[in-house]
Image (cartoon, rainbow, N blue to C red; front, side, top):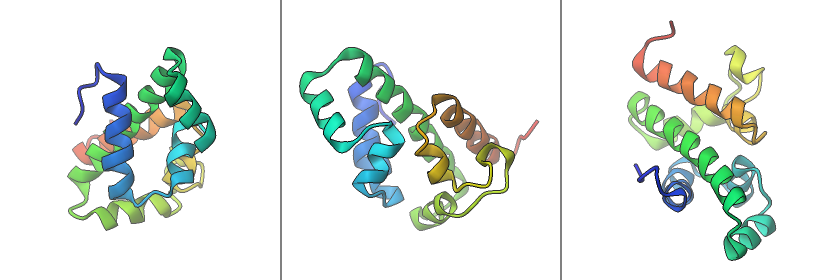
Length: 125
C-alpha cells in the first residue's frame, strides 16, 4: 500500500495497481475518482491542491477496499466479479459495488470500505 501521507502516492497506487487488478476502463477509473478524463488531466497539469487531495482521499478509500478484497478473494477475477454483480447489502442499494463507487460520493465510498473491511474480518457488529 502507498504512503497515505502522500496524495500522489494514493492516486498512483489506484491508477496503476487497483485499476489493473479490477480491470477498470479509463471511464470507470475517472468515475470512481469523480472526474472526467479531461478534468483529471487538467487537474494533474495545474495541480490544484484541493482537487488533488479530494481525489486522493477517494483513491485511499478505494485502495482500502482493494486491500480487503485481497483478503477475501484469492484471485483478482473473483474480486472483479464481486465489483460487477448487484449486491443486496443495504449499503449498495441494489447497485453493483462498481456502480455505487462511480457515484463518487465520499460518504458512500467510506461506507463501502467499512463494509469490505467487515467482510474481510468477518465482523459485522
